[in-house]
Picture 1 (cartoon, helix red, strand yellow):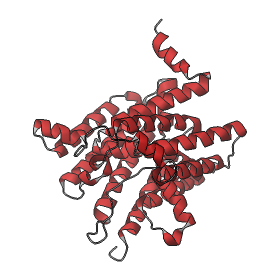
Picture 2 (spheres, helix red, strand yellow):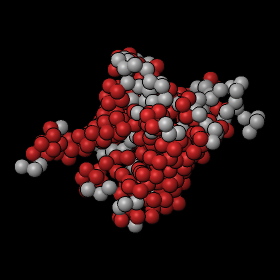
Picture 3 (cartoon, rainbow, N blue to C red):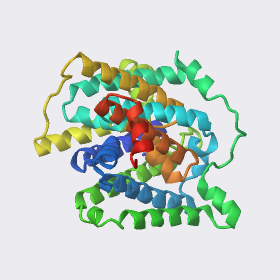
Length: 359
């Protein structure tokens, strides 16, 4: 590996971990919106607990690596330069609503492409272009307006460090204890314990998130060519992947580009092995419009909130970042409203159900 650049090492790690995530998505039905749909519309919490178990595994290993000195999680942008509460809420809500229009998140879009879904190719392009424009193009002006900092800058913006400062405990102990509590909660459900496919998929995803930290924080570590500590997220990397394909000779490989390719490859291999691969397109112009609008909302929202369902919901959660619960609740609210809008035809219907369901 000494002959490979840090970016190439990171890209290879992202490719490998992305393949594992693609497998978990197709074989284990690991899907954010699917988990929300199961809870909101069917009262089934198994796939939500699957996310919880994945978070717990990633969290336990991540803090263990930090305690062992393998990685320095304080250097991640989730903890070093967190976004504002307003930006997190607005961006995450937009992402969640867009996710309901598309029928999945950015990660799920890549997994669907691997299964032959051509409308997801369209969504991928729209979301990727919007995300990149939000980072450094026309959308950046609105993003910066929403993200205008009104809160004082935070140091080590993680509950593990906050609780550690308050109690005198090591952040490593706090993080690993949180992980164990989440594991206990997840397995408190008999129906989840009796769903081995969900459990295995959650383990794979949790290991993949921790592997991302290890690759970029240890394997790609080079004092002469620094590489940022990062793990999986599917917001900005979609735009970076499009740019890399168009200007390969003038661009560099990174972890995110490898991850995008890995999810598609892993999902494609899995669906072909299962004989579930089939070409799909939009049924009509109305569905294409939903895909386009959803892609725009997810692209802008994820960059504004500094992460998607995987970036904030898994990667950020593995650090116990302050932004994660805010992002998770906001994404859930946006997708919940969007789902009920699609089902009932009114944005006000979810509010009516909450206010009057007991009357």
